[in-house]
Image (tube, rainbow, N blue to C red):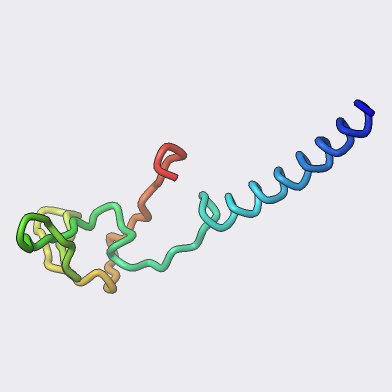
Length: 90
């Protein structure tokens, strides 16, 4: 009786490990996001205040180098550095 339950739990554990690995490939460090400015470490998002809250707009600026250059979220520049998301943010 107990041995059967242990076998079931071991099988479930194997399935869960496979699912976790698949999710890490999709969302973790192996995820491939486009090289758009919104995914860049140097990109600073602009916001607009609507009533009592702030909402992101489709623009921002690049903080790479000395000069800040206005950018849209779908653009890419030579200073692109992919943002690193830690496990605490998932």
